[in-house]
Image (cartoon, rainbow, N blue to C red):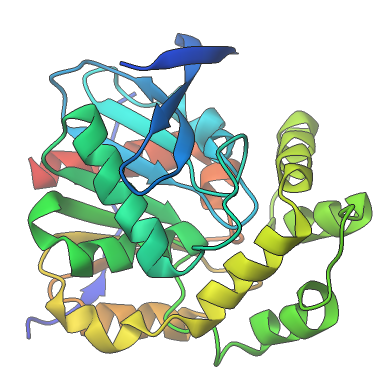
Length: 294
């Protein structure tokens, strides 16, 4: 196995039915519904040139595609970027079951097939990073690269996650308490973000019904892909905030050792959601990584 290490990247680079539009600095993002061969329908937005390198963005638990909305405005339009609301989240379909990492991974593969993309760079945040890892293991030929944000090596060994499960999630019931949703989203931050961003995150969390909260957290706790990480051959970049209240640095070291040639960028002072706290820097690091994978 090649040596692993820490790297800081610095750059100066600045067919379905549409349902809703979101206005951003680059124009209108059209939210679209797509039916997948896995039996679910997802909502997503797409921006950029159709011939650009495909990128798939996967949000964290109880978030939606809107988790990446601030960052999307800073990405070059030469990239073809898809931001998904994963099953059970946002305004995507909420099946009664199917919230294991393999289910999310199967949805990613089905989504790529549905939009006619052979392979993509997959970007995941928190739960989304675990789903991205599972996808890279299950579908190596379809994975051009992995960018993992606030990635866990293990949930079951993480006392913060297991404690949150036992105290707040295991017996959660509808309607979701707005204070729980706000406290959860606020706990991911170490630096100020625009109030409207936090409000949006809370609203998206409140869309997720209690059974999906339980199933998604249960699926994460049962995940054991760490034992298979050595199978990942795709270029991999880890982004981690050193004030992350959920993911310890030790998890990044586990991932670095397990994934051959992987690299780590540390966001000093950032929390569990560096793409919220520093969206322009995040977009620049993603753009530089895409150039390496091209």
